[in-house]
Image (cartoon, rainbow, N blue to C red; front, side, top):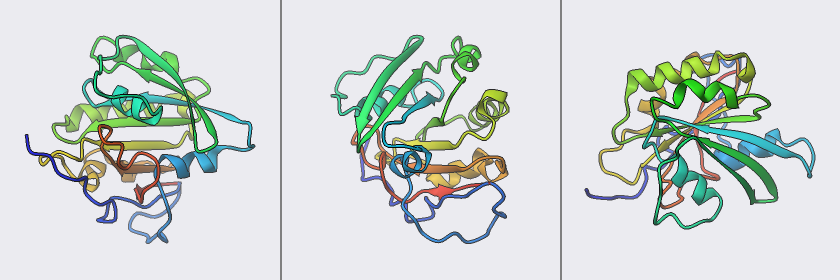
Length: 206
């Protein structure tokens, strides 16, 4: 399959939306991505953040986590159950829970949601299941443990020609209906690391 550079997030693939922002309301451009989210979440220099990393199987969650932890991504084994990594980067300590996305594991996702500071949902932009992805994400965000918890969607595998644009995925996930939390969607390539920390994202509610 032919590879290419990830789409620029400046092509309607970025911009934070806060809860309560009317749909279609212009937002001033500002840096987005994981770095900007954790900068707003961290209350004090020594505070640790708990992040839950979810998504359907083969979305690239483990590759993304390894890239965030500055580890080699040449050999990836699908997550069976869950992985936990403490990521130290940009002056932050992130305790990231990578939960498997197989059908047999998804019913147990909710057991890991307590005390979550940020939910990251990873999408395989190349061949994503629009209906199932939207359904799983909607059920997650309705869980009481995630009330008001910010949502960051990574539209992964943007280095592939067949990848759907982040804005198209945002529409397919009905992210514009999420008015009870901050959300954003970020085009990225976990394999190359592009778009993971700080670019400009498509944004959401509150």
